[in-house]
Length: 153
Ligand code: 4NP
Image (cartoon, rainbow, N blue to C red; front, top):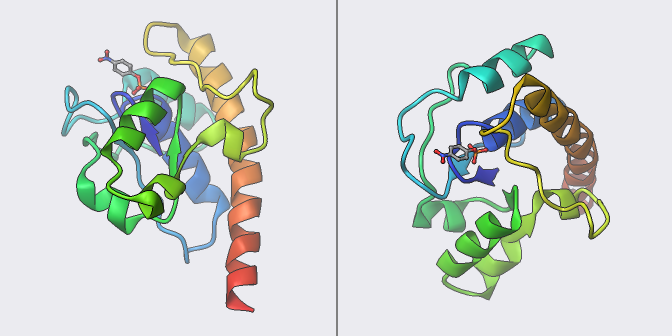
């Protein structure tokens, strides 16, 4: 899960997706900037997650690195700027294929493929982002579990 600062959207997406996948999956989140490196998620993201019974308070922000593009099978980007930034870091076609817009992968229509950044907003913006991510995570989790079954057979 990739956003800009790795303190609002992608930590929420990480926390939510983890609750929906079996333990065969490893989920992590990163940012494209290192401004908040080592910091916990934004207080409002932690509170919003807690309101929805998820604890993301032990996560720490870190910037994306070259090993992530190599090690992870799927790289989900929260908005188009993030997507373009991550695509520009890909070294080959195999890496480019892993990178997608999170909401597009979840099946949203083309008008609605960016997770709005709640950083400059209020608690309602965080809750709205939470609900958007929760809905998309349901769809992604289902897709990933299905792919896992298909790959096994
Ligand atoms: P995020 O939100 O990308 O969802 O973590 C932001 C966090 C920090 C900043 C911008 C967006 N910032 O400018 O510091």
